[in-house]
Length: 335
Image (cartoon, rainbow, N blue to C red; front, top):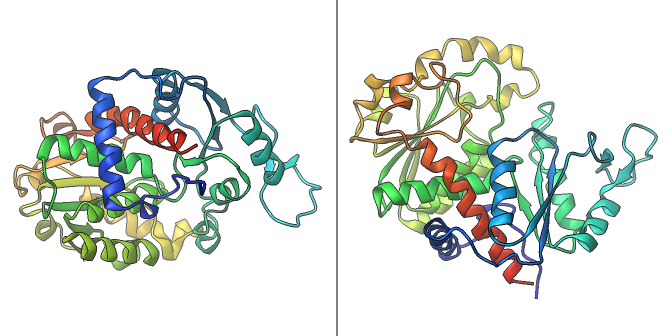
């Protein structure tokens, strides 16, 4: 059997995504199981985490498995990823050995590795997790790199819980201000899953500079065509919000300024009015609001929005636990 990884939802059909969501809903109703009994997962954190680490560790425990947390460069050796490199710097061992050795120890490997924010043409290649997938002989799970597929599933499950069928619901993915330029991972993923679920998606951002990478825009248009939804870009706040069933907020850096954030800063500073507030939400169709968390209150969204019944961010965060159990169980089941 060909080894299956969970690196991006684009590698999974709509039917396979629906099956994972159904299994996650089942785990939410009955959290404990033995699907990972006697199994183990290595959680490789190149970047900080709160929800991801907690939900993966507990998820493995709930299914009878064991999670080992490693932070390369801190409590594990720094890893080299370049092929043919002469390792005279800070790195101590190559991914070719790391992935193969871990594969002898554990049954799953999960990786969290953010972009370096220096050169998007390099970062968009997603070399770290692809290298793990290349050399590992066990399934590899993406815990967030330049996409965040586990967040996608948690988001989709929360939407289904509150809206039922998602087909052709109006979905607004809105950029919001943040004092620092952030990863596009969650925005990329929100676009992928909303179009995969057949929703009518509007990407709302201040200027064309904030439109997402063409790869994810093309995937979005493809998903929309295949699943009966739509995708468009808007820079008009009122038009985008009007009649929306869902507003999903995220901040991200403008790719044309990637690695040169001081040049982008004036545009970002001039766009603070993209904050999600009561006036904007009043334009929606009694719309839901969510965010992947963490969220800076009264910067990305107001207290009133975060504390309103429309906010399902906590439900979405809880669902990380359940969808990740579904992913781990499905990958273990193939072995």
